[in-house]
Image 1 (spheres, one colour):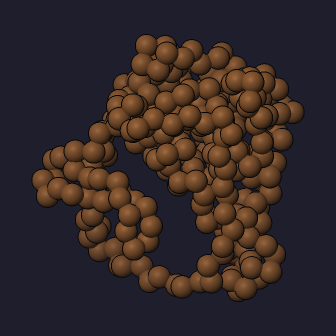
Image 2: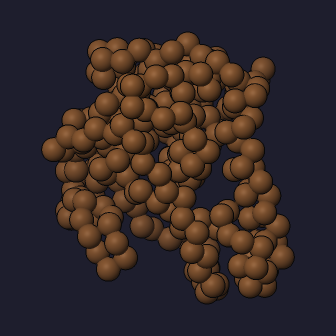
Amino acid sequence: LPAAVTTRLVRAPSPGVPTPTRIRRPRVLRLASTRVASASSTADPASALGVEYPASAPGEGVRGRGLFHTGDAPDVPVVRTPIDVTLCVPELVGPDAPAECADGVRAMYKAWSASLNVDVPEPIFDFLCHAECPKDLRMAAALMWARRHVPRWRAYADDVMPASYTSLYLATDAELEALQDENVRRMAMGSKANYAAGWEMIKTQHPRVADAIDGAVDDQSPPATQEEFDWARATAHTRAMSGKVAGGAGAV
């Protein structure tokens, strides 16, 4: 987040793989939405982070705001982003995780001192690179911290990224029953409970991380909230992508 280095559109079906049939289900209209009260804005937050659109352009379409392809050359990237402003976490953590991946991610954040004039606190480093937590939860913590403490990331989040998401995880029991799919209902209920517990887990089991996220941004900044966490985790679910850093080690 944003897209790491370069992103290209590839639309080639795999040989021998049948086209899936789409099953229409009732839409669940629950939104995860938040704005940081002290958010600042710039005229062009994407440019301030160095994000370029060589073969695309942000705009409004029939389905709302999006990024629209504008080029025909297959070798021209849709989006280009400097690696030294990118949010990243190692895909694997724990005793068997490759050390070079965590080292590569740590080096990326060290570069923020020069690129964003911000030093990432050590508790945030350690949590992102070593905490044995799901990668989307670690990415949510990274985004929460960046949005509250890095002015250019705050402007990008508020002015470029979606303010809200339609989320199955926020559906009511009645709406899940209306789907008439027990597997989907069970998945959504489990993920819903996981969302609700995520921020509380960080606060109780990783208090130094919560303190770093919740640290004073300015005199008007409210404490970090569950709503902010829900927005950040929904963003991680819908906007993060995998890539390679540090000689091929996996990262998100």
